[in-house]
Amino acid sequence: MKRSKPTNSANHSSPPNSSVQSREDLRALQRTMTSALFRPLNARWGMQKTWTDGRPTREVAAEFIKPNDRLNSFERLEIYNRQYWFRVLDCLHDDYPGLRAILGTKKFTQLATAYLAKYPSNSFTLRDLGDRLEQFIRDEPAWTSPREPLAFDMVQFEWAQTVAFDGPSKRSITADDILGKALDQLTLGLQPYLSLLCLNYAVDDFLIAVKGREEDALRGEASNAIHSAPRASRKKPVRRPKKQQVFLAVHRYENQVYSKRLESEEYQILAAIARGDTVAVACETAVAQSPRTNFDWADTIKNWFDTWTTLGWFCLPQ
Image (cartoon, rainbow, N blue to C red; front, top):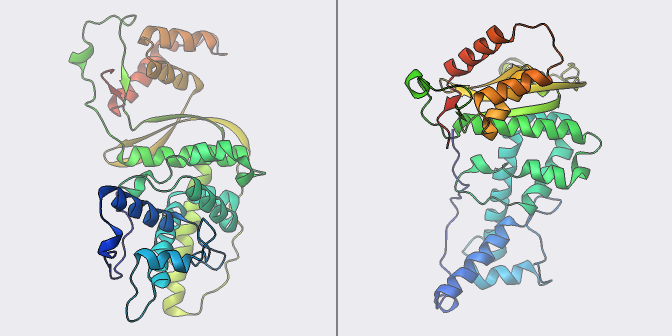
């Protein structure tokens, strides 16, 4: 489900007429308001007292926000600043439970705050909020230290699920689309919502365990709220996965998101097709690089293609 941008029900006041005399003035006002919203909160979850140029934020707020009979300009602006941050942090908290489990809630919140300070929301939908998180972790690994490789795998996997959930789709190919075409001339496209991942950890199993634990905790809290005082959980944290190479296809089928484990040769064939190789070249290259010998590749590859076609992964190439 797509989320809307955060909004607030606090009373809006137009800036004094003398403040906006042209489009350039309006753009300047918009930039000022955006800067105020996107500035990180202080340690007590309030608006920073000092503006970017060293002036008191209270003075800056008074230049474009009117007070009312209950709140001064600073307090009114703080409502929006806080709501923006509470909303976007809450979204990342919900969208990345696996990364949160790896880092711990406190460190995850620190990472999310640093990420949003560098890459604030720039889309009409909060669905895209984490689209640069993978790049951020790659560029600034200190935020995930000492578990950078595991965190990087998890971010790739969780973002792939977002893409699979509501990414665009194209018409799946039919038999008529490829009828009579030789394999050494046949090229295919992969659905835009499909992600192919080569990972160093079994984050798929780990995330299933994490989500199951959180669902159990929510059920327990609901039960305790009705019947008794909350009890401390005695469950151990989900054990982090050991290093293990895993190939995944993250996709959707009948409006549900799935991850499917792939053989290394499956991954190589699909990745080659995505690069634009012909079907023949993709299959021949994967077989040639496979360590398996005396293997019935013809039937195996045919079964793979039957499965991928049934799942609707193929479309016409660009």
